[in-house]
Image (cartoon, rainbow, N blue to C red; front, side, top):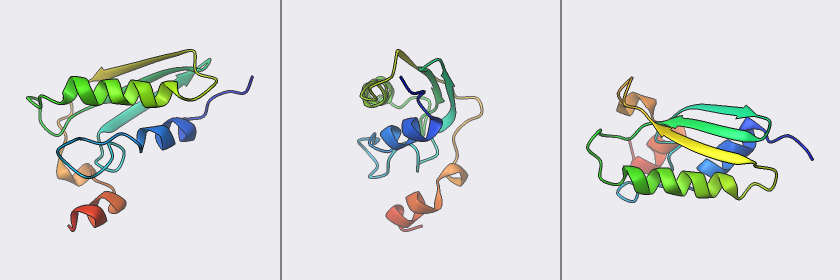
Length: 100
């Protein structure tokens, strides 16, 4: 069994989109941290706004996407709003998609 890499997790998270914005959660800058330990994955992420009703949906989609990696034992996704998200966190790829 090989160890899961942070890069593998990031690639899977690039398949997860905020339904209201046509940019994946990685390029939106919503992923704050990925901890990989013994093929257990813990993701710390945020939303574009604390009151976003899509938060549980996005977190579930992130869990499911990561769980598709064969070697995964467990996945947990934690939401935080500290620090708050800002448009400055959007990657260059994300800005290109959004035209900013």
